[in-house]
Image 1 (cartoon, rainbow, N blue to C red):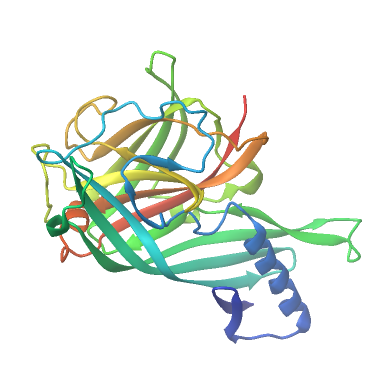
Image 2: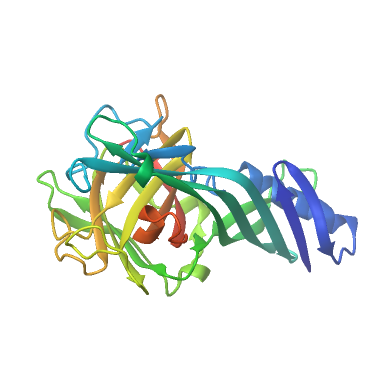
Length: 330
C-alpha cells in the first residue's frame, strides 16, 4: 500500500492515497513521528545561515585544537572567498510502502534558498564587484526502512522502529557528480593508516545503513577524507591547477552547530596528484558535546562547480551525499 504525505514547516497534508483502514493511517502517523524524532535523518545542517569561511566550526566541541592540516586558501592577490546558503523554504514528502512487519519510506526533501558568495580583501572588507547571491533549488532523497519489533510494555505487544536508512543523495544540475568517498585514520605522524569507511555512487541508492551501526568516529582523532568526482564541463578555473570544482565535507546538526572542511585537488599534503578529480583533506573529529559520551550527527559531502562559486550568472550545479555518523569518546 502506497501513500504520499507532504510536510511543509510543521504542517502535514495528505496529497493522495488509497487508504483502506484507520490502522494504516495510525501506522503511518507513527512512522512519521519516528522520522521527525530521529537525529540521524533530516537536512538540518545543510544550510549555514549565511556566508562562512571555507573551513569553519560553529558550536561544536573542538577542545580548542587545530582541526585542519593545510594552509588557509587565498585567491588572487590578497583576497579570499566565503560562501554559504540561506534556506528560505523546505518541503518534505514521504511515500510509504507498508507491509505487515516492514515498511519503506521514500523521503524527498525539496530545499529552496539563496546561495551567497562573498569576497573579502586583506582589510576584511567585502569586495562588492566580486560578491553576489543567487537563488537555488536542491532535491535530496533517501529510503528509510521501518520494522515491527516485539515490545511487551506496549499495549499492542509491539512497536515500530527505524531499522536502516540509505544515504541522502541529490543536488542541482547535472554538471558535477560525486563518485567515491573514503575515510582513513591517521597516525600521530599524520601518515595514512587504515581504511575506516568507503562509499560508492554505484550502490549508494540501495545501500541501507543499519541505524544501530552508523559510521563511528572517535572524538578528537585525526582522519583524512578522499572524494572522487566527475565534471562534465565546461570547467571554470581560478588558478593554475586547472581544477574546475571544489569539494566540501559539511558536518554537524544545525546551522548553529556545524563545521565545514574544504578538500583539495592541488597535489599537496594528502592529495598526491594535482587535478586528477580526487579531492582530499585531513581533519580532527569534533566531540559529542560537553558532558556527552556519544552523539549522532550528519555529514553533507558536496561538490560544487566553480562557475557556481565565482560567476553570478554561472548557474547552480552541485551534487550532495548526506551520511549520518556517530561520535564517541575514547
